[in-house]
Image (cartoon, rainbow, N blue to C red; front, top):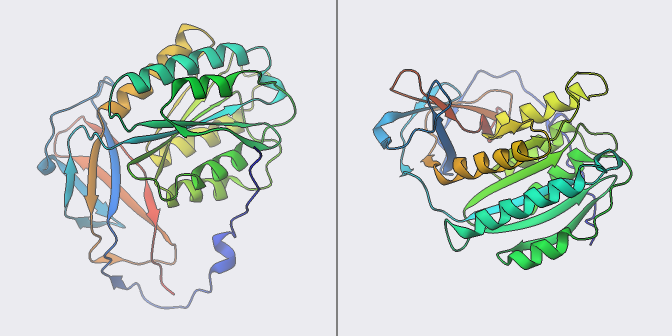
Length: 300
């Protein structure tokens, strides 16, 4: 099933900024943050309490009003699989690892966890809707053929839209070998769609080439920023056990997430609709992995 292409109007086309001083507004919308905490060695840190976290919104301190330690809210995981021509020799191995990832996902955690499979080359297609049936996903993985270009940003934007109205945690796992070549949307459109739908992006860059020759370094940097901005992470494994370890690391992150929430108050508005959120802990040496912000009010 091919998905229709949709293009978001860029934020620049919507702005008519007035020369006004910064103002403040109290919002009633809850801002939810999924957070993973790691120590200086990259080890996952559990056991923190609400009092251990500090949040600021556009620089203004916020009160944590929602807190879950090791949240078990159901997962909706959208697997975005690159089937462009350049993935041909590795696609079979990627599918094998994806199958094991789905087995592990459904084998533990919340019984309401679900996954969907989308493929992309020069166009984006839904191979399987959200399901908990492993055989449905496995059937969707059969017979995939690698061909054509790479519409990565189209895939992320359209995939992010599929989370609209879904309860729980929204996670996207992008498996690709490089950057975008054929999208009709932009990197910024894709990033905004992810933020609007509270999507956490993990990128798996399957890069078999050990040196920089032939690699899309710009595309890799874009994926790194997409992941970091949404609270996810980028992995750059080779085919084989390293790829399986990347999927295992994603599952460990998802099983040890904190859920934080706050109602914005006394937030200074700027001319940018994007609110910058920062989260840290009172314990030195700990790093909080979460999204960089959200789209909200701005100076009209």
